[in-house]
Length: 380
Image 1 (cartoon, rainbow, N blue to C red):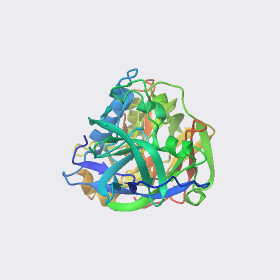
Image 2: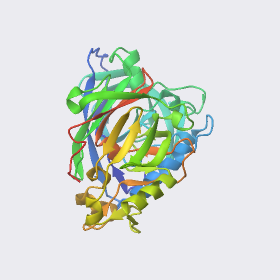
Image 3: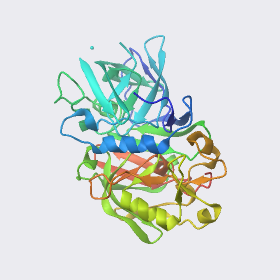
């Protein structure tokens, strides 16, 4: 299960169980999502959570459950079950594909980066938001994840039938005619608030009001183990200096930080002049060093996505929630824990996705990015 002290950084989603007919729509379905900081257990060790998740994501072992890694830093509210509804907190996670909520059919078991769950698997009619319904959606009993990762991630999670895949929410919406394509668009806005509705989740397409310019797509990587997830190929430069040559990694809503191969991290640390902060595990820079920061460029295909200096730092208004000092500046780039060449050498996490609109396209086996009105924001 998930530790009490965790950074809940992405999606607030209203879901409910209801016995109502499927609503067929021609246009994409958009739902509001929110970031929350759960500090009920004290301050949050971001790096410990994210590196633990990264280790589990890389530990792919055939059809075993070890690759079923769940999100530490993401939560979602108001998942209602029954009538009257019982409300649950849900994580929406691109790094897993099973959907489960607290409830009491065949047993299911899933391992995550910081624990695991096991329970019963059953199907029911699920309603997302207002009137968006899915019939015969598999839900495993506990509290709770909405998985929007690739279908193959569900293989091995049904204990009595490990070779069976379980239809995801996105797949069922498509199969039942509710959406016309298996596409999920994700939008965030940078925020300095502990809890705020700062984005949206779109099933079946994209929302043109949430990005600028055009969406550029890149095919999913074939490199193992990144290929099990929403994996892509990219290189990273700091200014004009290459710190990570073209390699495979993943895009993940469930990771808070931007994690890069340990050798790339060392180069980045040296280039920025940052020092390691012992309390948080994050890199720390001075105001003078912040003024000298250069763009961190993510080169994907023929496109470059520049993370500005402000996009590379943790929101200073939230420093105390991660055990930091209000007078310090912390960087959101850190080490994935292994050198490059391991098949999963970076994770573009939530702090990357705050600055770029992202599209997870199952229909065409690709991931897309676009700039937004917040790509160059200075709110941090």
